[in-house]
Structure formats: C-alpha cells, structure tokens
Length: 512
Image (tube, rainbow, N blue to C red; front, side):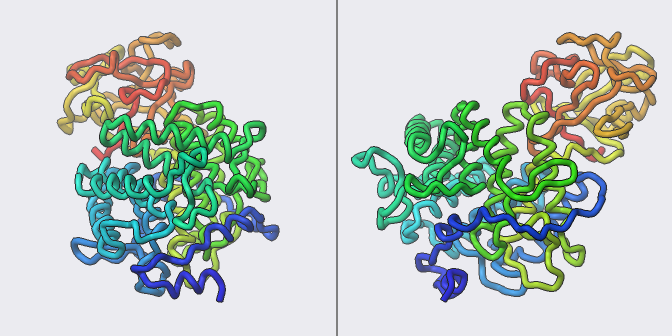
C-alpha cells in the first residue's frame, strides 16, 4: 500500500499516516516536459478573487456553524489534520487581502469544524509539526477575529506539544514525532513561528524566548550559512520550499534579515523551469502528496518578508512570475490550478484540495501590482480616514488631506493605468491629478491637485503585500503617499515620504 492509500485509510480521529518525510526526499525533482504559459493579462484583483472563489465553490463544505475543506473534488471527507490547518491559513490569507465579510465568517466555521473533527486537545496526534501548523492557523484566526476561544486552543496545544517535543538535554530542538527519532525543519521553524505569533497575540515574553531558542537551534543545525539552504534534518540535507519559507518567516519576525535573505536567494535557485523572461518557477511537486502544499507555504512567508523589508524590487518580479504561472495553467472549466505551475492542470481529473491550495495562496499573498482601472475611495490603514481634497475644492494647488469618508466626489478617485505598472490618480470632482508640489523629491513635500501633464510626479506605482492595502509610490521620487506624522486626526496633511512600511502610507482601494 502506498503512502497516499495509507492516508486515505486512516481514521479521522487517529494519528494519521504521514507522507512528509518521503515527500521531502523526492519533492525537489522538476518536471522536464513543461509547457510554455499562454500570454495573458497580468494578475489583477479579479484573478486573485477568481482563484479563491472557485476553490471555495468546489472544496468548502458549509454546515452552518461549522465547516471544512474536503479532501477531494468528488469526495465528502475532510482534508487531513495538517492539510486542513494550512487550508485555514489559506482562507485567512485571502481575508487579510480582501477584508471580505464572507471569508471572515468562514474563518470561524473552519476553526469550529477543525475542533469538531480533531478535538480541542490535539496531543493524540503523534506528529508535533501537525500541532504547530494548527497552532499557527488558530493564532492567526484569533488575530483576525478576536475570538479568544481560538487563542486558548492555540496556547494550550502549543504548550502541551512544546513540553513533549523540546529537548533541552539533547542540546535543544523540537522532536518531529513522539517517537523522538529526528529533529526536522518541518517542526522546528513552524514551532518558532507559532511561538512568535503567540507572543504577538498575548504579549507574553516567554513565547518570544521560545521562538528565539527554537530558531537559534534550527539555524545552528538545519541550515547552511554559506548557501542559505535549509536541510530537512541534521542528517538529511534535502531542501524543500516550505522549509525555506518557514525559516524565512521566523528569521524575518526576529529581525535576522541577512539569514532570511540568504534563504530567499537560495529558494530562487530551486526548480528546473525558467520562463522566457528569465524567471525560475518553483519545483513542480506532486499534487497528490504533501509536496502539493510546499510552494504555497513558501510564498506566504516569502511575501511577508519581502513586504516587511521593502524588497519588492528584488523579489516581486520572480514571485509574480510564479503566481502568474499558477493562474495561467489553471483549467478553465472550474479554475482549479494544481501544484505543477508550468504544466496545465488536467481537465476532468479528480483533484486533491491540498494539491490545489498552493496556487490559491500564491494569488492571495503576492501583491499583484496590477490595480484595475476604476474609481476608488482610498482609506488610510493607520487612521481609517479617506484621502480627500481639502475643503472639497477642485482648483489647482488644492492640498490633499484625510477626512472621514462621506461618499462625496471630493473623496473619490479615478485610478487609470498609463503604461506598465504606472498609474495616474485623478479626483472625480475636479478631474485634476494627484501631484507632488513643484515636483519636489524630498520628504514632506505636499501632495495636491494639479492639471495632469503626464509628468512623473503625477504618476505612481502600487506596492502591495499589506493584506488588502497598497502603498502608492511616486515615480519621480520613489517616495510614498503618506499621512503626515502618522496622524489619525481629520484634516491631517498628505505628503510624500520615504517608503518605510508604515501603516500611514498604506491605503485600501475600496469600492466607493
């Protein structure tokens, strides 16, 4: 019996036969018979929504107050433990991008369904990494919903798992399973992320200390500082993208940017297919095994690292090429896309939800950098106030400020692509463009309305990776559209300022 059959035959309440270790040995093999992608429009919000909506339509089972993702497109059984946890994270990724009230409600249903299927105490599961994946999902669920029940599940199960898995006497590190035969990356770096998320959620410095200790042990035993490659275990140097991703995730959280960068750069060498534009596509893992989820996990943590550290110019084109390949190679009959991103998804085949998950994650977490040309209200993330023309005025040199959104035309903005990834933003009431006063390039230059002349100080690019927020960057200066002094007060001035990942420079492009 193969490992897939073992997993299918397992009881939903019993420890589930794992396939990860076997998958890790073979997962990096690239598929040689790649098919070049079709020429399509660059990914947009529409395509990202299309991917998650299609996935949900096929795999999500709604039971009222509970729900789950089913394992296969033609089945009814729930995805197994760690797969379901990752699918919850996928849904959270989408909610953080969109703020969708539908997806908000699904988070609660999925977490309730997970507990219904797997109990509130997860220590029956011999795989310590499974518990850590679920801890991450439930902590993120709490962070997005405020439901303290989810946080309690996460804390209690993390604490129980840590007490049985961390081995200080052996020099540190988390055991992969209760049999204590190996200390793998697949448990140590997720455990460190789980601990850090709990630190964020609770403010308990003990979780920060655990995250730091686990990461430091993993860095000493599970990575090559010369290349940035993450080993599967101290005795198995096979790299996989999800281990690269979780290492990057915790290194970023703890401020170890140099190590995260090395790991990211190594991931850029993984995979055998290179697009005509010169971008390397991540390994094309088996969509019926654990490897089907590896690239999605990588993309989640790589995208966060890129966004947090303002590394879009370095990594975004490559990541976008991967997300684009996943979308381009979907099957158009139902918009499912499997984990082999440079081969077309087979038409008519039964699909595993886990094997289709990575494509969805890629399109949710990678900032598409393509904003649809339409009319928006721009709502500042820090203040919750809207970009507005001061006093509702429409003339040249009218200063831009922030006010509570009223639906006035002076708070509505027409965003239009003017070529490549560059856009002009014009006021609906005035017809005049968002411009930097006198084309100044320094910090604190005032942003105002002025007749559009196609000058670079009237054009922006959009950087994303802040959930459903974007940062407009002026083409002439490279500086961000920013609320002065991170003010939350109505009437605060809008300026340009160095892009430093501040929330006062992040804007929700909302339907007005």
